[in-house]
Image (cartoon, rainbow, N blue to C red; front, side, top):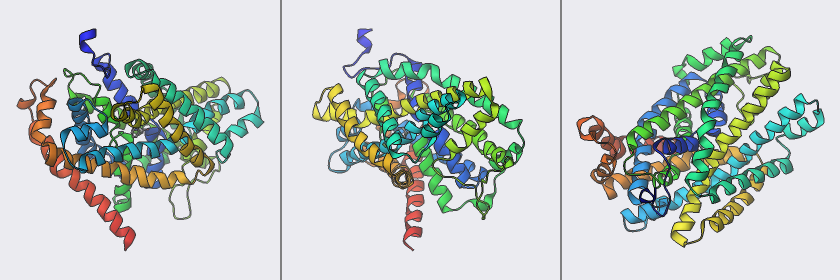
Length: 452
Ligand code: PHE
């Protein structure tokens, strides 16, 4: 209806917004990043710290991003500029634009692997061994670049379609099917020998494994997986209607994201131990699990192959198709940040902006495709440092420049009985003190350890 629309476009329905934000959050961060980090950091103790990071830091920051976005109806740079003056506010937005571009450059390569594995599975089960091995070679720079570029082209195509048309429709059907496929695969893995050793490692925390490096990785992973710290959810919030409950939406998005990551780990860690039973080495001499960037692509295809025949083909292809779609709804939100910045602040038409920014990111992605060892470096710099730092600046801005009372006034829209609950007592305290302090301590300690 015309009166519900602003010139920037709006989400079509209440559910549409939650789905789109969840679509941004759920992606490779859950199914590639999380299990890899769990393996790298010794299992259940990582999960415990990760959950604390999501609830204590992630959720309050997500509410803050939605609120600033809806209140200003701007891209991240314009939003902070509108609410404060001086050099600091636009810097927070520009930091996010940069993180978005850099994260996309490696994300596209991993997304390209995912998409490539759809074909790997089909070729394998069709008996086309040579073709399937070609796609499975993750060290093949040319092939990596080809799939990354294809993925970027798909992202640009959806972004140029505008907000709700492209993004809402893509997410609506995908997520429930992804959950069903994950659950069936988990049940299958649990019937295989060795899986219970993996389950033990996944669920029983070893508290002695908790150290600064683990906390640093868990915090970065929480920001990355929840799409926080770079303005992606702020941008999505800028298309949000006043009558929607921001806090409730943020809780749903966080639960969906954490839930799907937990399922992915529940599949992949036990599957590693199943692989061990068939003679594959999964641990180094120090007893730590191998956790390279290609872990998920080493473990899962073998699992599908072990299912054999029609089942293997069905689950193998549908899993990688669904994961590609989940990655696509995330690359859309990553690209939307720099694109909406160029549209709003430099008055460039949407299509031109998407193609221009997309083209630049494509060049970065090709560089990463040719040197996949860059992925680890980029994850450390941009996921683990860049995003939490963005979150820290956002909290400082909200608390000391914009003031949390103003944010509360915005949140009250769509949350009628807010003042009767605990929320107004807890959230301002968290964004003002707890979140920035925790982020600063984690980043500061890591820097200190690095330098000493
Ligand atoms: N959260 C997405 C994922 O888990 C990645 C992402 C990060 C998207 C930051 C937007 C912003 O795959």
